[in-house]
Length: 299
Image (cartoon, rainbow, N blue to C red; front, side):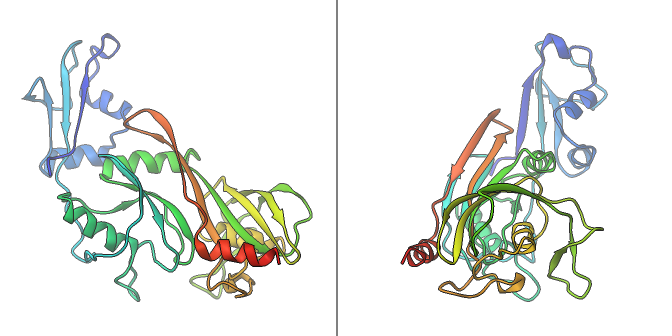
C-alpha cells in the first residue's frame, strides 16, 4: 500500500505562515510531526523536502507523507465473518455481531473484531494496523467506526471527545418506564470490589444518556437511547440505576429471559467525515435475537 499522504494548495490567507503553524491548524499533532521527521515520513513543497520552519507562499503545494504503519505482532489476523456497512480510503463502518469482543484480551486473544479486520486488511493489500474509534461490549451488537490510519483516528477521537460522534442505541429493558422520554445525568465510576463492574457514584465521571420510549409491552419496554458521553457500560449502568435493567444483562440486574445476552444494539452512527468535510449517517437494523425478543413480548 502507498504511504498515507495529505496535500493542500496554499491560499492567500495562509501565505506567510510557518508549515508548523499550518499543520497545527489541520490538527496534525506534535507527536505525528515527530513521527514524520524521524520514522520515515516527510514534508514537501512542490516536491521538494522542507522543514516545519518553511514559510508558505500562495500557490505552493504542501504535501505531508506519514510514516508507514505496522500492525502489532500480538494481533493475529483471522478469517472471520465481517459485515462492512461502509468503506472508503479513510474509514470503515462495521456492524459488529453479538458475542464478539471488539479487541482481543489476555483471556481471549482470538476471535475479536480487530482480528477479523487485520485479516481483511491483509487480504486486500492494506499494510496498516487496526484503529477502533469506538468500542462495543462483547454482547452488544451494532455499528462501530474504524479509522484506517492513526491520523484519521486522531481526528475522529477528537470529535468523540467533543461529543460530535453521535451514537444511537436500541434496547429492551425490564418493566415500564414512567416517562416517555428523559435524560439520565449521573456520574459513573468503577465499583470498588470489581475490575469489570461500574456504578453510579459521586466521585465518578460525568455521564449523560438520553432516552425515548419506542413501545411499551406488558413486562418490558423497547427504548431508544443516545449517548452524550461515552463511559464504560454507560447505558447498562444508567438504565439499571433508574430501575429498568436491560433484558439479558445479568451483570447489572437484568434477567436472561428469551435472549442469551444484553438486548442492546448500536443502531445509528453519525459523524463529520474529516476528509470529505460532510456529515455522514449509517444505520444497522436490529439483529435477529432482539427482533425475536420483541415479537415474543407482543404475545
